[in-house]
Amino acid sequence: MEKFDFIKNQNAIMAATILRVAEDFLRAAAKCSIEESHKNGQISVIVPELVNRAFACELYLKAYIFMESGELPKKGHKLDKLFAKLKKSTREEIYNSWLVIGENDIEDCVYARQMFKDNLEANGDVFCRFRYLHEWSPWGNFMDIHSSFTKEQWPLHPMNAERPFGAPPTHSGFLAQFATVIRLKAEELKRRQLLIIS
Image (cartoon, rainbow, N blue to C red; front, side, top):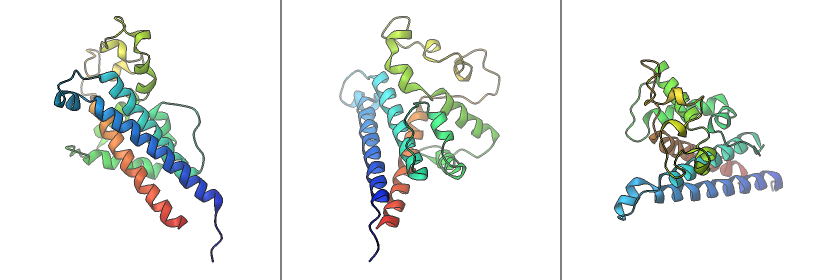
């Protein structure tokens, strides 16, 4: 009879808990989406959608990092920084899945890689920026495009007239696509790890 590995099982339970909470935030984001709001005849709530989706991404990434390394990142909300903590092979898997997610059919090239990187950076701290919208929005409750980006992120936005010609665009749909991909990858890793434990 194989010896019961308490630490491995505790880690599996912790990872499953993080993933369950991430899933809750992703469901909350879906309920706030424009599509869902229009279906119910309500006004969409963009800020809660972005914050919930970003928080879900953060938790999926932290769960994945934890499952890969056994170390749970305690601090940090920036998606691009968390993404960088994943193994290189994992980052490649996620990127390759993003290329074909949903209606995407993007060919892997330097431009696509830069678009992925730019979108990850531009959406990197949505959770922090948008939950305190009242602190930086000129009107207190309305997002204007320019002030919703940090000084470092604004050059990446497609509406910036100073954006270099041919630079890959960033778009709000990226966060939804990224959340879908990392959710699937994290769940897949959890299933593989549970097979190892049992």
